[in-house]
Image (cartoon, rainbow, N blue to C red; front, top):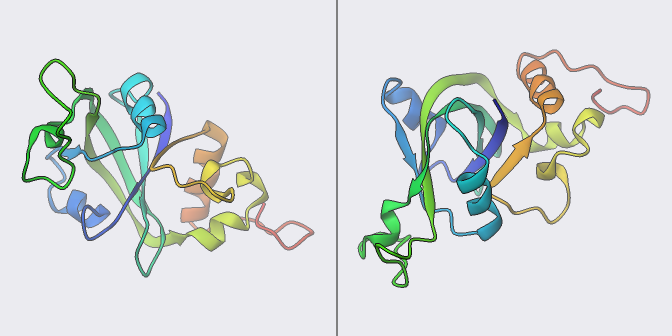
Length: 165
């Protein structure tokens, strides 16, 4: 099993959307970045766990957890001319974009904000906290995953430099 962080705009798809239908899979569609697509296509697998990260909104941060319940398949939105993710170059034989299906696992009692994540010395290698990272799908190491879970439960320690350890 691997761990991931998927960014989403909450007005499009939020942790609350997952929580409303906990037994229903949600199609994670519309990824149009090749590196993120490659992660979805080649590495994200059924059973992997995903942090749902709310971005481009007032309250930015990790909101909860979902599980991958179906690994990559052609993103149906690329074929739908009414979809904002429509790709006129896509066809049945050339379908470059992929989706995965996610299902609700847990909503955090409080959003874990980006500024708090950036304060943690144990998350310095997490792509999310590095300058210039705009990737919507990114890997999370097992150690980072466990640390973020502890932080979401209010169990982060402060190191001697005043950063969360």
